[in-house]
Image 1 (tube, helix red, strand yellow):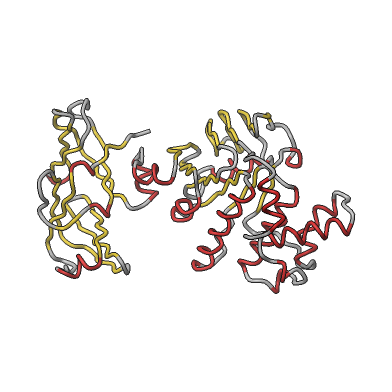
Image 2 (cartoon, one colour):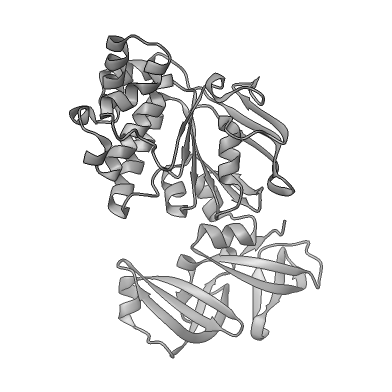
Length: 371
């Protein structure tokens, strides 16, 4: 960002804004939107709450902000219980999905508005607002009104306004959803840099797996009001715990089957259509129903070499994606997705309707949990 004021601000303080939710529940009449969620977000980290619509992520964010009352449980920020405190006394700031800029005010006065409401003198509030516009690289647009700005520029002004209270925790409700894909990529890089420079905690709600993976130190996958998995982006992608996480995070095939036998630290699983797969997991009971996951980019065409699982099926679809080609293989009752290197695919291209075999190392087969 290169702003001198920002550099001084980040050098002068340690990371802050540790957030903890302790068995937090939110009820709307008889509906439980959030169900006894317990979560720790380290100070100075970037956390993404990820999940489909209605999973409870926005309700969780709003309870941290104080815009929704907690039905049960506690919210702590830097070890202080803020459950019953109003938003203004929590050390948090919220950036809303709609940005909510005042159309009749220019950028400078939009950013300075909350300072004006707190009685800060005109010269001081304008100086601070201009400094924050510099942080988000919008100084040259200070005199423009929101209607004269692009979506990405409006987003930056809203971010500067949220920072006027010098928060410990910045809460972002799907802040990139209104941007086009190219601009979204640029703005999320700016968000990541800004969070690191400010040394405060960002909690960001999104339904975009790509967005969460690109931004987050901590990805929290939510489903039906509960946390299915929390961890680093790499951990969640490489080691999904449940069928829901594996499917939602993308890039994985989820296969169902029944355990036939276990020996030597492995389980033999009977799948759909008479297939038989091996998974490196001992101690399972024979007859148990299980779910397995295998990454789509770890599957290859052919018989496989050495210790491999193999499935055969008919090519149902082919989708060219540039560097990769996605092949959908219909195998009995299962569909298998293969993400193949472009050069590998076109060295021996397939067409819809062709029969093919897909293979992957047994070690790439992961046993999933059922919550």
